[in-house]
Length: 382
Ligand SMILES: Cc1cc2nc3c(=O)[nH]c(=O)nc-3n(C[C@H](O)[C@H](O)[C@H](O)COP(=O)(O)OP(=O)(O)OC[C@H]3O[C@@H](n4cnc5c(N)ncnc54)[C@H](O)[C@@H]3O)c2cc1C
Image 1 (cartoon, rainbow, N blue to C red):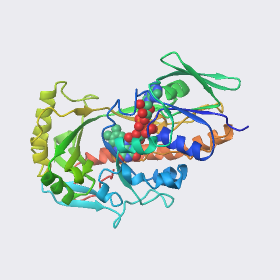
Image 2 (image 1 turned 60 degrees about the vertical axis):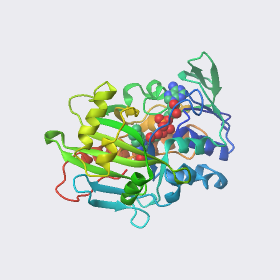
Image 3 (image 1 turned 45 degrees about the horizontal axis):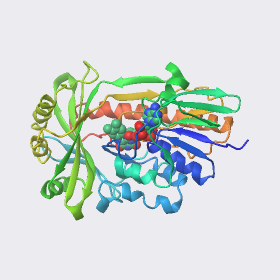
Image 4 (image 1 turned 90 degrees about the horizontal axis):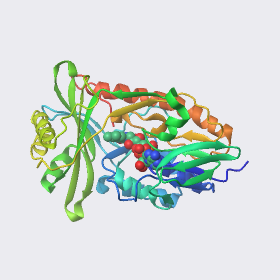
């Protein structure tokens, strides 16, 4: 039976890539996103695309896909992102990966290519050519004889043949579909992110270390292990002399989920205390925080999927099925060949097998990053 309509909940990277894939294959779809509009929420942060690249390319028309570099954090180095590991005390570069010395890949079917993209620009790129219904927060679904009925919080409803939850790590579709069948672990790490506008000189200092991103290993703090700084270009616009850098600090916090003081002044003070222990330019960038920057924190949620009953009508993609620590992220997107129970079953079998391995690799990577190293031992890449 031909699929008449696929309903996608969530207009993040996974939902939008799937929408492109369905569109390319002539399968009708609707995307529902809780954000009020494309600009109502700062998408923040940046991410690295590696293993998802061939799937994204497959899902898009060549005319669309060729613009992927527009999503890159640093347009002048879009095709040559560099990931480094820097010793935080000496500034020595311990590891460097780029196109000349690519990332080791998990299997021969995976690509060595990577892009470092800003989430905001990635969403712009993926939204292009896809119709999104904004301000629609999914509430629940109900299976019917001929498909699935979806209800939204505003009281509206829609019907389709297949429902795909692409609504992120805290997915309501997943909660209804899987209940406690998906294992969820909050990892004991503090995560603090801050976006910092810098001048050209500072940008150049960072650029000389890496054109896109890297990890600065931190001093050791007894049993809690290393503190680590992750840095990334976020939005570089040389023509307009605008340079935005992302700094993320992480450290193990066995005593609680959040581990940060509530008020802004104490948070800034803590970041500066930690930043002062690093070498320049990282130290100066952090010590020069004005104090009014948005300091963003989140808990790191890991989801380990196990098979669910899709009834041939409901499935999950992306973080809704398998969120993982950001230390070795690899967002997976299926190509959209969803036509029946068998197709969903095949997709889920492959996805679950692959993502259990990926979640485990990311889990190991974040612990590894915070474990003191005696020398330039291998570090996880992001
Ligand atoms: C700090 C950090 C760094 C990361 N770095 C990397 C990296 O380098 N590489 C990598 O591959 N991954 C990385 N990740 C993970 C990556 O961000 C996710 O894998 C990716 O965003 C997943 O995309 P998604 O579309 O599945 O979910 P999301 O990006 O979470 O998108 C879900 C969408 O669903 C919408 N939504 C949620 N609930 C509802 C609802 N009830 N109704 C309607 N809409 C809803 C949300 O508004 C959102 O737009 C990182 C994550 C973090 C936190």
